[in-house]
Image 1 (cartoon, one colour):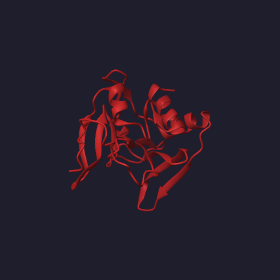
Image 2: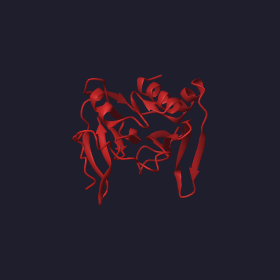
Image 3: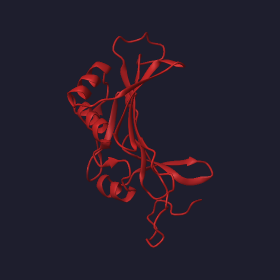
Image 4: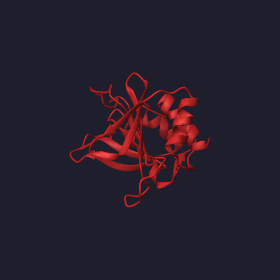
Length: 185
């Protein structure tokens, strides 16, 4: 099993990629991995939720600075994942469905397979490692749009998100500005 496939299996089983887990605080992740790059607003009219990145890990944080989602664009063939103390490590991310299913099965994971009538060349393996957290592994039947279909589908994208954060309390007003844009702008 490759290092990336091992990390992917742990993400699927636990809902965490290292310390990147649903509900983690932006300040804690910044202290561990270094300052993220600013990915911008999610909504044009509001500053929060806001996108940040740690290496090639795309994240979205709520105005209370809790992690709401993680995305990994594995179709690129390699990703730079953050390491403690700053910096990153590059992982090869080409994973065939047969490798993925074997690793998940060996780890005792179960999932549901979601298919789409309007996207016959895509399917998703979904799992909920905790009550309100979901992990999705999106597979495609080809590496490039113009290529013929593959016999063994490839991992295209990884997502982790949750649903339990309807009423955000916002940042604690008693604390000093955290430097991540305290205003609602």
